[in-house]
Image 1 (cartoon, rainbow, N blue to C red):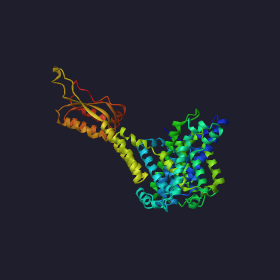
Image 2: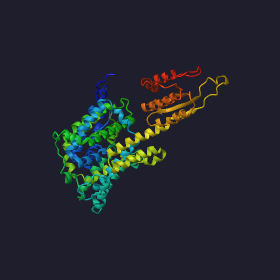
Image 3: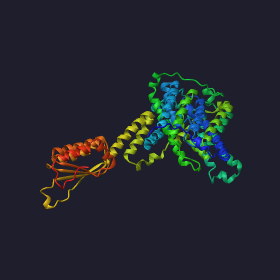
Image 4: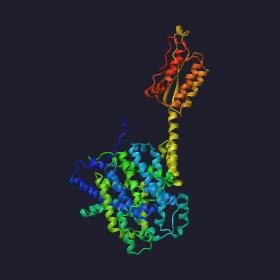
Length: 565
């Protein structure tokens, strides 16, 4: 079938039959998500070792492109918590300029993945690996935020786990009680605020009315950010702020700039480029699947993974030219978008425009935001990001699953995500081969008792029934059959019932060739009975069936014998 280029953003289909009511809902949802994205985008950038505006304009430019060109109805793109550890490590090891080059190159890779319709390959990553590295990243995010949450006097945090722990312990005596108080208060607001307005809560019982409903819609991160920033200013708390640390946020859009590019540099950045592309693909498509599961709107259509990857590729290619960081789908903001009533990509585009308006108008106010509050928000993100209950459920799963999940988790924490995913995928393949090889069986079948009149003319008979997949991992299980034939009587007739053999590869075919050779040396016949479609096709294309027939034809065949299939 001829390959064809298919680039069709979801917005082209989503706007068919678009009504004014749906437009108003999308605008409201987009504005809500834009407000939620403000503290998160700054926090993700600062935690990644970048300036806060890098996160803000990544959310604005990347988020707009992902919604405009993507293959989902409601996904929100932007900087994500999963990239914090990756970006911090790349900046520390390679520098900011090389982060921008890696991100742009990863964008090209993501676009090619979608262009060649490889989006579904991301689903081949086992869920145990995904849970393992997600929990590992959550631990590293939380660890990286303890410096600002506790207000420790540390100039720069190292990039690896053990060095971070050592640095935190060494500087614990510099703890700032004001910063810790703000951080604890931030976590308290984030946990308590949404529960104040749950159905049946005391707040709703005491105070009913429109005003309460309006307050209930204000996102908890925004409440924490505004109230605690105002409190810190009012009490003149001696804590680090965005202004004291970064000098504020520019009120103008970032200038377009080309990073220094050379192929020699690109060759050195293969590992970070692949890491960004792999994590971006996994995160964006996992986020799209979550949105598919939560969506209830009748106009909603499930995501197109290939179109989504192409949109992510464009966004990641463009954003670095404006000093941004990697872009991917963001689960928290996407779920917020859904719950706010979004139905089309218009909501995501409004989110980007609303965030741009906030930055351009209210940037000076960000000077006073305490870093301890942003650290509290990220600690809350890390807690929600991790699937901690999966550790409790490990007792219900096999040792293979436990090894993959715990191994990926520990490798992510101790080394990095790239090593964890690489080792995890190799280990998953090895364990899969082992599991599949264990499913293959070659069961001996007792021959029927022949009538006395035929005993003189009938060949001695050996029979086996094959079950499962005969591939390179199971080929050794054919050795007992070969040994039984070699130790058996001359002129033996060997029957292999292949009705239960559903897969055969070239190594398995070579094992069958060994059986054929052993049968030939004993002057016998080989009969392969009832092969399924795939094994039969391989045996015919490789000439194995023809060789079986030729060898059998060279032997004197009693009338009671069955020819090979």
